View 1 (cartoon, rainbow, N blue to C red):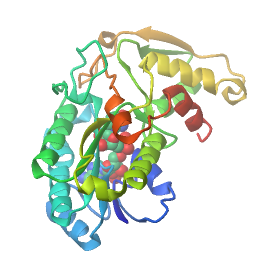
View 2 (view 1 turned 180 degrees about the vertical axis):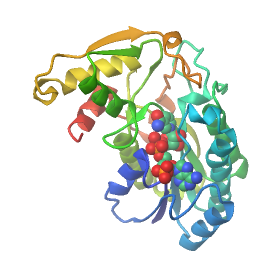
View 3 (view 1 turned 135 degrees about the horizontal axis):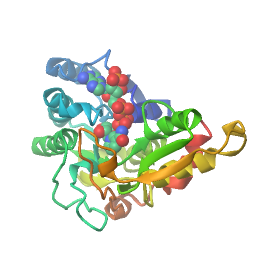
View 4 (view 1 turned 120 degrees about the vertical axis):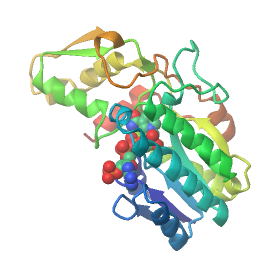
Amino acid sequence: MRILLMGKDGQVGAEFARLRLPGAQLIAAGRKECDLRQEPSIRALVRNIGPDAIVNAAAYTAVDLAEREPELCFSVNAEAPRVLAEEAAALGAALIHYSTDYVFNGEKREPYVESDPTAPLSVYGASKAAGERAIAATGAAALILRTSWVYGARGKNFLLTMLRLAREREELRVVDDQVGAPTSAAAIAQATARLLAGIGAGSIRAGETAGVYHMTAAGATSWCGFARAILEKRGGEKSGGAPATRITPISTAEYPAPARRPANSRLCNDKFERAFGFRLAPWPQQLEEVLETV
Ligand SMILES: NC(=O)c1ccc[n+]([C@@H]2O[C@H](COP(=O)([O-])OP(=O)(O)OC[C@H]3O[C@@H](n4cnc5c(N)ncnc54)[C@H](OP(=O)(O)O)[C@@H]3O)[C@@H](O)[C@H]2O)c1
């Protein structure tokens, strides 16, 4: 199986590129190989490679900046996925694409299911929802995996920010009224490889499993709860004996940001488990695994 990976330098893309994929040939592309704002460049790359499956881990993910750059954000998150999906459909290749909890407004009390209506609060969320619709409209055999609160040992993310701030400050004020599932980039990459290996690109192509799925770590916490867990698990010798950083819960209103975020980001993973027979590990376990590599 030939797999074309887009976004090889991002959090999820870099983790996917590191995996051993028995029986598969991986062609990994980053911004240098293909600028997703350039439609001809996307089409040329896909036609040149002729993959059996495309994994699109590339995205415009600067959620706050997107409020000021809506055109760029939509170009990468909605237009480029449409083009990838058109090319996949023309080739008969499978497409695995990632989306986000930010397609919802967070007003639901329960975890969101795939059939819940989207109602994004931000430009980023709207662009990702538009990307989902654009892919579906092409009729490509695509798996759209919505995940949440992605972090890892590399890249720009909440985990690394908290570890840095904890070294610099005595107190961290962290939002406690947004709830979701922190999901490691490594877990997402491993699950993607398992999907490709287990079901084979063939059954995605045949449309048996195509559709939208929620795929997050099991369990949920707030950003504040996540920060506490990071510093607790990180404690001991790695803190260098410094006095423990105090974590103070604050509300979203106390931490104004350009983009609005959903209060409830919890995604129900039942459909994913029914279709594919596994769940991602609970978020505290994923956190421990990532911290071993930081
Ligand atoms: N991060 C989260 O918290 C989160 C939450 C839910 C869902 N997701 C989704 O999960 C997926 C993976 O996210 P991630 O956190 O791994 O993203 P990431 O670390 O921000 O990586 C995205 C990659 O896309 C590339 N990219 C952006 N614009 C491009 C362009 N015009 N041409 C070519 N490449 C471009 C970036 O390239 P450069 O490195 O050159 O900038 C980067 O390598 C995305 O679909 C995202 O929407 C993320």
